[in-house]
Image (cartoon, rainbow, N blue to C red; front, side, top):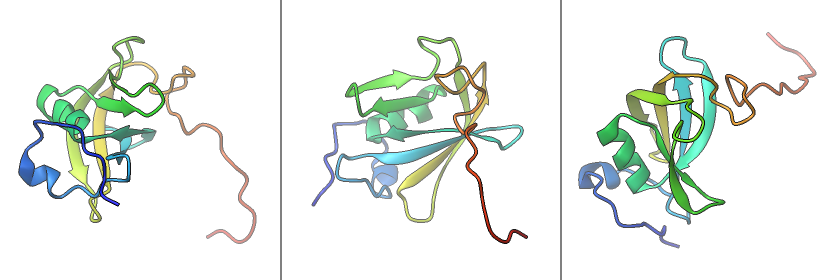
Length: 123
Protein backbone atom coordinates (compact mmCIF):
# COMPACT_ATOMS: atom_id res chain seq x y z
CA UNK A 1 0.00 0.00 0.00
CA UNK A 2 1.39 3.38 -0.97
CA UNK A 3 1.54 6.08 1.69
CA UNK A 4 -0.95 8.93 1.50
CA UNK A 5 1.20 11.99 0.85
CA UNK A 6 -0.35 15.45 1.20
CA UNK A 7 0.91 18.19 -1.17
CA UNK A 8 4.14 19.79 0.03
CA UNK A 9 6.99 22.07 -0.98
CA UNK A 10 9.52 19.70 0.62
CA UNK A 11 12.69 19.36 -1.46
CA UNK A 12 12.02 16.38 -3.78
CA UNK A 13 15.47 14.95 -3.01
CA UNK A 14 14.57 14.80 0.70
CA UNK A 15 11.03 13.54 0.03
CA UNK A 16 12.41 10.67 -2.07
CA UNK A 17 14.43 9.45 0.93
CA UNK A 18 11.45 9.24 3.31
CA UNK A 19 9.83 5.89 4.11
CA UNK A 20 6.36 6.89 5.26
CA UNK A 21 3.74 4.80 7.03
CA UNK A 22 0.33 4.18 5.44
CA UNK A 23 -0.84 7.61 6.67
CA UNK A 24 2.10 9.35 4.97
CA UNK A 25 3.94 10.02 8.24
CA UNK A 26 7.40 9.55 9.70
CA UNK A 27 8.24 9.49 13.39
CA UNK A 28 10.03 12.53 14.80
CA UNK A 29 12.16 11.95 17.89
CA UNK A 30 12.91 15.27 19.56
CA UNK A 31 15.94 15.85 21.76
CA UNK A 32 17.41 18.83 23.57
CA UNK A 33 20.32 20.14 21.54
CA UNK A 34 22.71 20.89 24.43
CA UNK A 35 22.11 17.89 26.71
CA UNK A 36 20.97 15.28 24.19
CA UNK A 37 18.02 14.40 26.47
CA UNK A 38 15.07 12.88 24.62
CA UNK A 39 12.09 15.20 25.04
CA UNK A 40 9.21 13.79 23.02
CA UNK A 41 8.02 11.88 19.98
CA UNK A 42 5.62 13.29 17.39
CA UNK A 43 4.65 12.72 13.76
CA UNK A 44 5.59 14.61 10.61
CA UNK A 45 4.40 14.43 7.06
CA UNK A 46 6.33 16.00 4.17
CA UNK A 47 4.85 19.45 4.74
CA UNK A 48 5.54 19.42 8.50
CA UNK A 49 9.15 18.51 7.74
CA UNK A 50 9.32 21.25 5.09
CA UNK A 51 7.98 23.84 7.55
CA UNK A 52 10.39 22.67 10.24
CA UNK A 53 13.39 22.89 7.91
CA UNK A 54 12.46 26.28 6.46
CA UNK A 55 11.17 28.13 9.55
CA UNK A 56 13.42 26.73 12.26
CA UNK A 57 10.32 26.06 14.39
CA UNK A 58 9.31 22.47 15.13
CA UNK A 59 6.10 21.70 13.25
CA UNK A 60 4.22 18.42 13.56
CA UNK A 61 1.14 16.66 12.18
CA UNK A 62 -1.58 15.89 14.72
CA UNK A 63 -3.11 12.51 13.95
CA UNK A 64 -6.09 13.16 16.23
CA UNK A 65 -6.88 16.70 15.02
CA UNK A 66 -5.70 16.13 11.43
CA UNK A 67 -3.87 19.46 11.37
CA UNK A 68 -0.41 20.98 11.66
CA UNK A 69 0.80 22.34 14.98
CA UNK A 70 3.83 24.41 15.79
CA UNK A 71 5.25 23.42 19.17
CA UNK A 72 4.74 26.34 21.55
CA UNK A 73 2.16 28.24 19.48
CA UNK A 74 -0.42 27.70 22.23
CA UNK A 75 1.69 26.90 25.31
CA UNK A 76 4.60 29.26 24.74
CA UNK A 77 6.94 26.26 25.15
CA UNK A 78 8.72 26.74 21.84
CA UNK A 79 11.18 24.44 20.11
CA UNK A 80 13.85 26.22 18.09
CA UNK A 81 15.35 23.73 15.65
CA UNK A 82 19.14 23.37 15.62
CA UNK A 83 19.43 20.30 13.37
CA UNK A 84 17.40 17.54 11.73
CA UNK A 85 18.82 14.11 10.83
CA UNK A 86 17.21 11.26 8.89
CA UNK A 87 17.80 7.74 10.21
CA UNK A 88 19.30 4.93 8.13
CA UNK A 89 15.87 3.50 7.20
CA UNK A 90 14.35 6.86 6.28
CA UNK A 91 11.33 6.34 8.54
CA UNK A 92 12.39 8.51 11.50
CA UNK A 93 13.85 11.98 11.88
CA UNK A 94 15.86 13.18 14.86
CA UNK A 95 15.06 16.81 15.61
CA UNK A 96 17.53 18.60 17.89
CA UNK A 97 15.99 21.67 19.48
CA UNK A 98 16.52 24.45 21.95
CA UNK A 99 13.54 23.79 24.22
CA UNK A 100 11.89 26.76 25.93
CA UNK A 101 9.78 25.56 28.85
CA UNK A 102 8.27 22.10 29.10
CA UNK A 103 8.25 19.76 26.11
CA UNK A 104 5.36 17.65 27.40
CA UNK A 105 1.73 18.75 27.42
CA UNK A 106 1.61 17.62 31.08
CA UNK A 107 4.05 20.38 32.00
CA UNK A 108 6.98 18.00 32.41
CA UNK A 109 10.32 18.84 30.80
CA UNK A 110 10.19 15.55 28.88
CA UNK A 111 7.37 13.22 27.86
CA UNK A 112 9.48 10.28 29.06
CA UNK A 113 9.09 10.68 32.83
CA UNK A 114 7.12 7.48 33.57
CA UNK A 115 9.89 4.90 34.04
CA UNK A 116 8.93 1.24 33.93
CA UNK A 117 10.61 -1.38 36.14
CA UNK A 118 13.32 -3.45 34.47
CA UNK A 119 13.88 -6.90 35.94
CA UNK A 120 16.67 -9.29 35.18
CA UNK A 121 20.34 -8.85 34.61
CA UNK A 122 21.61 -5.41 33.76
CA UNK A 123 25.16 -4.49 32.91
